[in-house]
Image 1 (cartoon, rainbow, N blue to C red):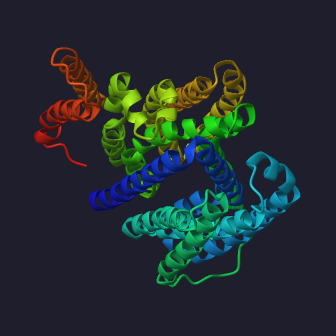
Image 2 (cartoon, rainbow, N blue to C red):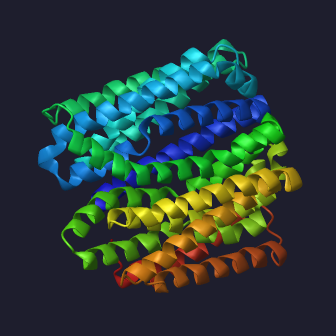
Image 3 (cartoon, rainbow, N blue to C red):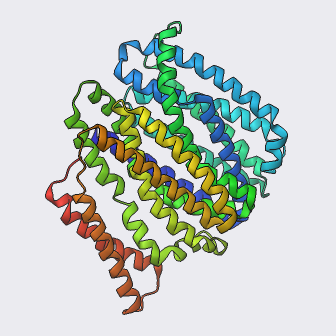
Length: 464
């Protein structure tokens, strides 16, 4: 498992770094408004991909990892349901094409949107089969290639053409999705899955589980894009671009958390089916420490360096420094909430995660609607943070109530102490020694934090 986490961690880290470089390139050369238009388009594409799969691929991954001999029937049954929802999604996009065009402000977008939707849907289908086989090394490589190809092509097209044409970015996304589908399908073929006719019993099982998983995906969609959609509606693309920078930075901190959760999920489902809850508890406590390893020091350090970090992307983005601080606090809650949500699904308590996601999602919509109009960008960040906190508390309450699983917070407390000492060291160097270079300050603070963590945790023999 350790090797799988390392590969997925490297992949997630590379994807986030690539995304930040791409965002920096767009922001510095073309401005926040151009970046905002790209973000809005990608958000609509993401919404389409979520609606098309409605939690099915998580259901396939879970069922196939538990019943490997039935993967042929499960795959064909999933494909049958997915094809229906994909068709429905495409019809909706065609019917509302004028409204989407007015919102996005992009001409001739429909062909690129629908084509990318189809390719992206079947890429995600292939990913579910690959993860069900626990081939996370392959999944990591495919995931990284998908993101690298898109951003590399987009930058290449923009530089060669010399114009700020968003159509070139849409074309780059479509080509990248086509290439990624071919690469992922080549690996799926190697499994020699013997497809069989869909069965009503499997379709019912998949739909029941998908009902819960779909809410988790919709919740993720809501927390990832709802604030962006409403900022685009109540404000404009310029503010979408500023918010996206802060969101991307905060999301980058979750690479460890997402890697650990992704790798653990099939194993937790398997252990739960075998009643090996001691293994689940051990894996969860290790995941807890890893998930919060980076978000805690990043949030605490942001009080002193948020301005300088945003200035890297361009001076116009500095006005989002409070947004960044709020979203970095949210990253702590997001790591905890995502860990508990997947844990609940894995141990057969998907219903709890289902209801918590509904409540938090509705709160996020309501808070965004009111707070963006009252507070602007800061309101969007606060809405997401409060809603995430509600989701986490709900999941934690029912997990404690329904199970005997315990959580070991000692390692996390050491991380908190190390982060506070890091902040103090940065403040001392800045005020007493008059070192104002932000890179030096971050390096000194990071060194202090790293030494304490190393001798306080890893040196003692902590292992995954």
